[in-house]
Length: 328
Image 1 (tube, rainbow, N blue to C red):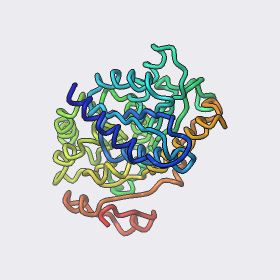
Image 2 (image 1 turned 120 degrees about the horizontal axis):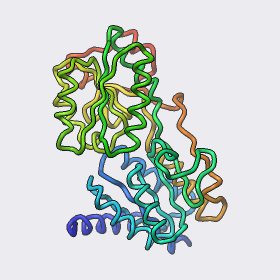
Image 3 (image 1 turned 45 degrees about the horizontal axis):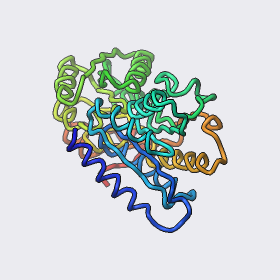
Image 4 (image 1 turned 90 degrees about the horizontal axis):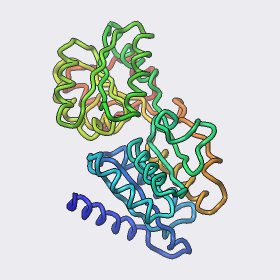
């Protein structure tokens, strides 16, 4: 734990230095809590910081903490951040809940923003998507799950069974898994849902699904799995199993296809919200939680990953959507 705290404190100093310059916002300190290091969450963080900088907070001091995948550390880091920051950002459901718990325990009502949270209402961060709760607001990365599941049949019209896997402690993943399960059944396919507890059993969980003869595996935007995509790739490669991911950076990590939101843009929108709150132009309760429209998402695939798994995308499917080849 000491080594981890030294590491994140070092990152905090670097982040603060990166924002140094001239301006009148040097007294503002913003805490950012992230559960684990992986590309999508990092993009959300970068977008948030840019949103702040472009909206009047070039000199804000950023105290960035990363729990390194250790859920127990989230609460310790959250307590320190809410004690010392003017405003905090939670990236992902677990980090956001840890910050809210720390604020509630301390009796604070400092602005708390969240991003990359699939269902902030079910998680207990806000009362409703239209009426946020007091000092908490933010942006959701709710996926176009139905369209993502539709890719299975579009890729293989003879597909009959889809596996779903997620980390049992991630609330946002459970929400997406339930949505995917309903979409799979609505499409006339069978589903098999399996959970993992941490990074060590991801590969075994994926192998169990493959052994059941699934035609595809659906992976929600699960922080634990996203940070360990190679484990899923190792289990599914050369087995002819399509890997449909919740977002494009998971495809880059070893998946095949997705319809993905842009995490940098999501973070940027959250940073703009934070700037408006810090300027007293708006209150957290002024911001509804609005999901990204599927029309604003991007179809993406990895030609090399498909080839390594012995899979080929048909010309019909290539022409059906405007695709982004992540290998280029």
